[in-house]
Image (cartoon, rainbow, N blue to C red; front, side, top):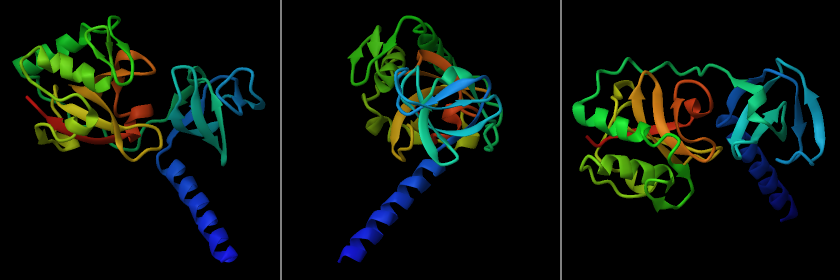
Amino acid sequence: MKKNIMSLAAASLISLAVTATTFASPATVKDYVNFRSSPSTSSKVYDNLRPGTKLNVIDQVNKYWLKVNINGKVGYLSPRYISYNQASQPDPTPAPAPSAVAERVIQNAKKLIGVTQYKYGVNRAPTLLDCSSFIKYVFGKEGIQLKWGTRYLKDAGSYVPRSQLKPGDVILLRVGSSSQIGHAGIYLGNGQMIHNSPSADVSITSITSGYWSTRYVTARRVI
C-alpha cells in the first residue's frame, strides 16, 4: 500500500511538471533582473539573471509579477525585463475588412481604453468590468445580446477556425497553466485582439506572439 501511494504521488508530480511545461510561453531576459522565490520585492532572491537567459512563463500573477520556470526551478520576476519569443504557430491569414457592425463594435471597444478598469466578476459598465462583461457591453451597444461569462461566450454564435478569423469575432483563451477557457477578447485583424485584462485593463494585444500566443482555445462568430 505504501509503495502504491508513493507511486501515485510521483505520478502526480510528473503530471504537474508536464502541465507547466506544456502551457509555458518561452521568453528571454532582456536586462538584469532578480529571480525571486515569491511575487514580492522582500522575498528571497534566487539569482540575478543576465540578459539572454532563457525561461518559460507559467503564469501572469498580476501586472507586476510573472511566475516563470528556469531550468526546472520555479520563481517570480518582473515582466518589464523579459521579451517573449516569437510563437511557433503561424500568424492567421490576413483578415478581410470588418463589416459595418463589426467596425462599430471595435470602435466601441477602443473608446473604453483608459476608461474601463478590470475587476473580476463585475459588470458595472462602462467603468468597471471583467473580460466577458466588457464584451457583453460593447456588442450590446450594437443590439447583439450576449450572456455574461466565458462559459456562455464559448457557445455563442458559431464556431470559427483560427485560420478564418474576421474582425469582430470573439476569441476564447485559457489563463496561466489551466486548460480551461478563462479569458475572452475581440479580434481586430492582423493577429491582434482588444480585451479587458487584469494586467493592463482595456488594451490591444497580439495573439500571435507574447503571452497570449500559446493560450488561444477557440473563437465564435456572433455578428
